[in-house]
View 1 (cartoon, rainbow, N blue to C red):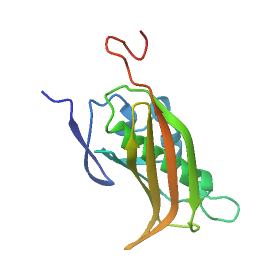
View 2 (cartoon, rainbow, N blue to C red):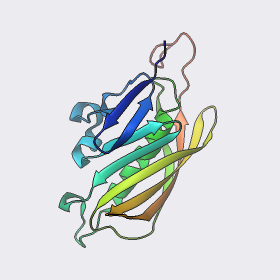
View 3 (cartoon, one colour):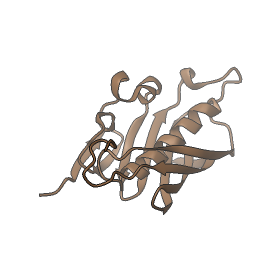
Length: 165
């Protein structure tokens, strides 16, 4: 028997995750993943070291110059990188962002944002992950930001429960 399960959503193809330890992969709720729920993010993919997260651009995401706030773009990138890492870790393995750097390439005013995270290196206790954030407008797909992050992984020792031994 396998722990793998397929999930699909309105934004894209089916994705596979491990035994789903986090309910926000299907439906973000304030209790499970508040920031995704607050911003209206959708988890598109979390499979084979790749994470994809999308959001529709609207006035809630804008700063006073009427372009998407950089913090929204960074949050989308961080979440996509997390989904990439989540897809290769054993269920319930704790992890988190140690540091991340973002280069903003162009402003966004409309359409949809799609962040695609990809694992570059996975070590024993850290992983390096990159994400490209795209603005989708009709048939046009333009990179608007590039991110590189380092993540901590707390490997659970055999015989431990939820990281406590």
